[in-house]
Amino acid sequence: MTRLRPARPMDAGAVGMILSEFVDTTPWMPRIHSRAQDLAHAGDLIELGWVTLAEDDRDVIGFAARNKAELHALYVARHARGQGVGSDLLRQAQAAAPSLTLWTFQANTGAQRFYLRHGFSETLRTDGARNDEGLPDIRYDWRQEAA
Image (cartoon, rainbow, N blue to C red):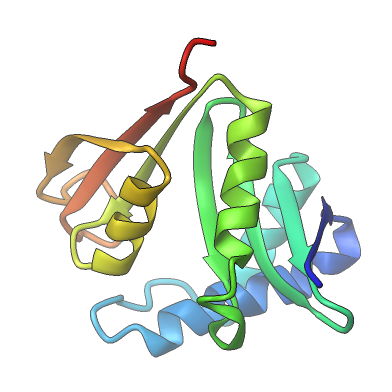
């Protein structure tokens, strides 16, 4: 069973590990930050109050970082992917904001399919000149439907 909760400072290690795991296991993703920097970044996001965790009975298995209408990050541990964890995190973010914006890399076709399934629309493609990784990316937007 997956539970969602706000992250606490002591969760930075688990969040940083999930982020590092993605970089380490994604062939097209360059490592531009050390694992220690990933952990520090996770701590910064948590300190800002942006991070929601997904956990099972034993471990943190995913996280989302949202600041108002901008979804900065959504990552699920490799062993927990395909089990609805990302959908749970995204639905919570959608319930908390009338609209959301996010960016994903053009090479991340799985994320593209995921966001389209959850009602996001592609609004912009770039050559990657404005992101740290230098990878072409895509902006997606979502707006709550009027009742």
